[in-house]
Image (cartoon, rainbow, N blue to C red):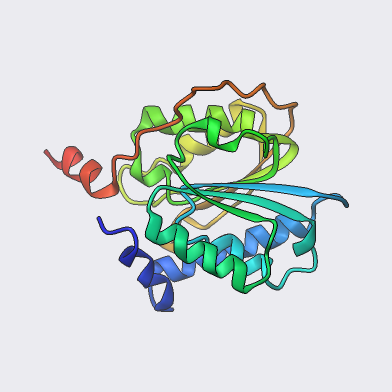
Length: 217
């Protein structure tokens, strides 16, 4: 999978990816609007080109309150995100080219007010989905928000993802309609965060296409 050209579908309004992006951006905007006064911290796992967060922050009234760290492995995507952030004057946004699966990459920025796990759950195994959700209890502050995505194709793991978050003390705030053609969920933490455990690997990024081939075999 070429993860740079994969983003091109965001520029075509008729695609499910473009519609999902708008849904994620709406939830990011709502999370920022509802956050308490003062400094806000945001982390994004497998951030890609950062379009979800950066396009919202560029015009949001609280843009200067937000410090963010976007972690992405593909240097072409991080170069795009870096240029977007600088062009928008978002000088408190840090773009890091690194393995987003390691919790060490978020040290100093967590527990965060907003955690973005977009484009991850559809590309990792069920066991790693559960492991990543458990790690969100370290990454997200009490009262903070996790926004996540997962496709609704078979096997539909969205109900399992919701159950896992809710077992760990996250309250469901919003979930896209099952017929939307994509899955976007919002959960808010209701517990004090767990200490960050250095060296923890949350997931191995397998890829949607590889997972689908394995399921069909």
